[in-house]
Image (cartoon, one colour):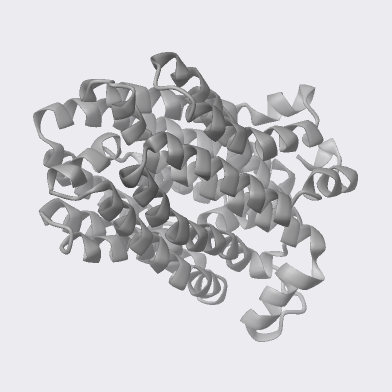
Length: 392
């Protein structure tokens, strides 16, 4: 199953080498979209993921991880093609739908495939290492894309999208060579979705806490990803530096994800969870205070926490999940992220347009903190008391 790991790296590279990302908000604005409309487009994207996330995870568990990855990479290639030819608010909708389907079929499936590929060889204890490196590799690819895409965008914003098409089709090629790993069968007869939801949110308290915590943090980091370019504009940073900054931020995520095992050697899990829990909302508050360029330091801290959070919280979910329902449970996590983002992003975009980006940041921090306190405060003690360093 070692080949699967290399192929997953290839899919990750294809998915995250997004040449258009350093300027996508500016590209939308160049085509006449307001920030509110941009957030609506993203809400459509997130709504499609929300609708299809769990069914696609169920499909992956039932039909196969390979088929799910092939469909996901194909939808991505077709979706970016639609974006490349679109010129107004209405025309972007089909592309958002296809890209949403792409995300839902890949999300959860790649993590489940990695874990079960390792587990089939008795190496599931290496998941954190590989997941951290894979997240880091993805962000490294995105960093390269930000540098290259930034320079291409200086010539033409739309060219970044045209060049993206063959990169996405490369992911399809990698998916075709995946091999299905063996998975164990437990007590979920017929993959009953109702039973899986009940297991996730009622029967397994640890899993419920881990899924909710990971989902809220995911919403926080996703919101920042779509506000970061307007934030650059607020700081009066020239567009030519967007790619360089984006690359540096993604390299920060890559570094902290790649070396998470080493970080864990001198910081216990409780401390890391506390940093994630309080760091994300507090940094939103801090970033709302000033439009001085030195505030970029806090943006880098935010992305460092993101690099730690992604593999750490995914590992927690996997620890409390069996192979038979792993992709479905990971999809439930993504479902929560997308539902919350679909609800919040147009509202936050409106607040930014109507009042200011600083107000939107302050409100984002308040909402994230409230959701964390209401739904997953006990995770700080629950996970710490039930785990040990060998689990990571």
